[in-house]
Length: 117
Length: 113
Image (cartoon, rainbow over all chains, first blue to last red):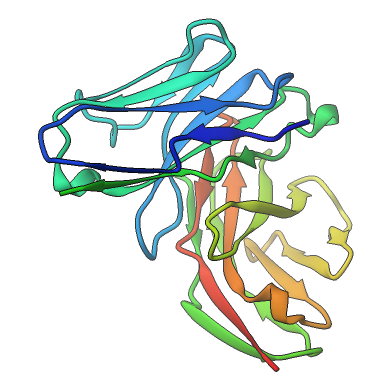
């Protein structure tokens, strides 16, 4: 169990550029979540996958945001035409679907800190 | 709608003393889960404790216990024998039947030597 891995840890970009983040969940976990966290706030739900299917998307997720999990393993989150308001920590989390396997809780990665200049 | 409320932006506790962090929730789901996570300055969210809505006994994990009062819709975290390493942000969260997790705004805990 190597934990949830996110890459990169930090990303600085200019307004208007596209950015892509990657998340590798714990290998046997079939659920994967993306959250956004701004300073002084708790994580806000963005989207959720079960295997390769994107089952829920928050209304916070504008058309500039897209997430994929093509083979049901790693996931990518892309933000197009970044804006300064997109600056935040983007957290990925995974969980098994079975409560017996710990499906009650989320296992988080260390996050990607995005700064849009 | 699901909502988590943490009314204490910041708390201080003396080392070795106990501290209670407050959390109230609102949901219309009959089945739900309540969680506490710790977020140190490094940023990673660390799971602390879980309480299911049908669990009759309060959950305990080492120095952490969850004071679950279902009728009041509260799920307070109690940390006993505080340590300097407990200084961090603490988030209360809830999972409803839709598998989405909702987080509160957090409480910053500072342990004073």
